[in-house]
Image (cartoon, rainbow, N blue to C red; front, side):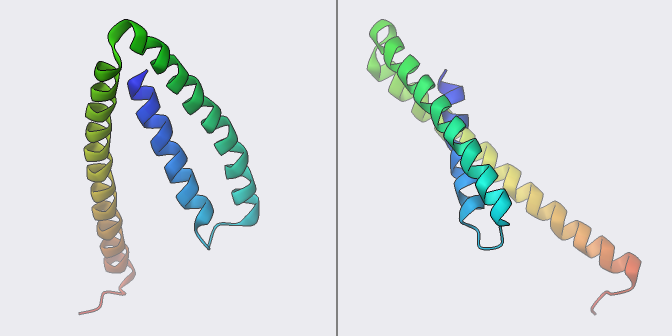
Length: 104
């Protein structure tokens, strides 16, 4: 449940950034808003389930597990974004090379 909570919260954050981006088409923004309503329900459902589990496992264990999984997710996501940026840069260089638009 903790992994799901961390993932769902990150997804909502990403959708929110996409929705606030000035270049996002209004229809895409409307769709994102609908998706975010559903995602918020998921976060609440999982948060409530984790609260129920705290009675069995203790709130401290739930909190430390969430913190550990959040840190891991942050690290992996940052590496993923870095790799994505490197690939975009490479693809841009490759495109320039093949189309003869290199600037030297």
